[in-house]
Image (cartoon, rainbow, N blue to C red; front, side, top):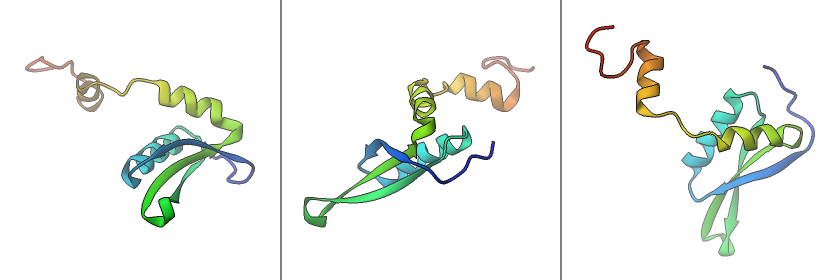
Amino acid sequence: MEVARYGSYEEFRAFTDRASAQAMCSWFEFEGVPSRVEPRALAGGIDWEFVVIVSSRLAHRARRIAAQAPPTDAELEFLATGRFPGNAKG
């Protein structure tokens, strides 16, 4: 789903590490919500936070996506193999 990269954006969530912010941004991008990570200096540049910015037009969708529970290990195994966990042979 191609979405325009221009328009207004809003802050969605701040993280103390870049990896967590980038993971959420990647998830949103996969789901078709334009987003980016902006680093921001705190306390005179000693500490940093990494803010996920999302398209204002699709912020409601980002909230819905973030509210979903992450998949369980069993669900991931099923999606990867097509077999239910615990089955010796599918």
